[in-house]
Image (cartoon, rainbow, N blue to C red):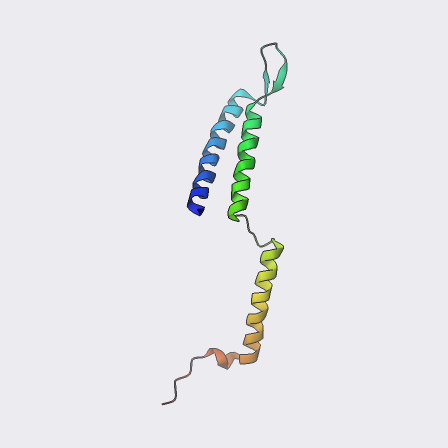
Amino acid sequence: MDPLLLAKVVRMEADIRQCQRELDIGGIIIVNQSGTPIPNPMLTVVDTLERRQLAVIRSMSLNQTASDPRTINGAAKTEGKAFDLLRDLGASGLIAMPKAN
């Protein structure tokens, strides 16, 4: 499932970039048929695509970072267990010793 979602993220990125180029060319504010300046509708398209892309990224958990409390807590528990084991074994416990026959 992840490769399919990743393909969607990449496709949406390509669409975002294409729409952004059109937005850069047309400008943020355009003039409608009656001569009134209005926000370029491409702003809404880009915003929608970016929101969809972020939703897919979140569903894949690609944005897990070291600042995520769940990640920090899990790493801290694992690290604490490793330090406790190392303290119990001592440095000599890390050196491979020949087996007695």
